[in-house]
Amino acid sequence: MGDAALHPPVLPLLVTFSADPVALAWAREKAIAAWGPVVLASARFDFAETDYYESSMGEGLKLEILAFEWLMSPDELPARKLQTNAWEAAYADKGNSATARPVNLDPGYLTPAKFVLASTKDHSHRLYLGQGIFGEVTLYYSRGAWQTRPWTYPNYQRADYQEFLTACRGWLRQQESKGPSK
Image (cartoon, rainbow, N blue to C red; front, top):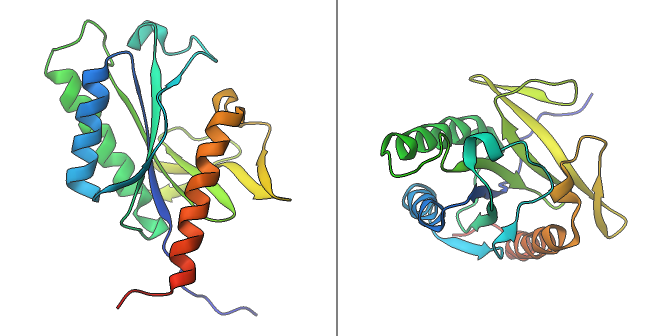
C-alpha cells in the first residue's frame, strides 16, 4: 500500500486565442492581476489547424501560451477554469467585438512529465476534477521529447508549441532544483 502525499507545485499555464490583439492583451492583464507575473510567454502562433472556432470567433486566430511564476497546486485547476470562463463572458459582454466569442481562455498546468488542460466537456480520456471541470493530459514527456496521444489537438503536435513547452519544463525543473522557498 502506498502512502498518500500532496502533489508538488505545478507550473500554471494559460492558453489564449483570439483574432483581436486587444482581447489577447486584456486576457493577459486579467491573468497577471489574478495569478501573478508571467515568467515565459510564447510567440503568437497562427491557429490554423481547424476551422472549428471560425463561426464563433472569426478568422485569423492567434494563440499565445503564458506561464506564470507563482506555482500552484494542481487541485486549483477547476477554480481557474471557472474563473477564465467568467473572464471570457465578461469580455464578450463588453460588446467590443463583432464575434460571439472574442477570446478563448484555456487554463492548464505543466509538470516535468505532462501538460494538462482543463475542459468543461467530458470525454472518455478526461478525468472529472470537480466543479463541472475535467482534466486532460494533452501531452506527456518521455524519451527526451513531448509525446502525443490520439486525442492531442493538432496544434499541440507542432514543434514550435512543443519547443515553448520544453522551455517551460526547463524553467520548472530549475525551480524544483532550488527546493522550497523560505
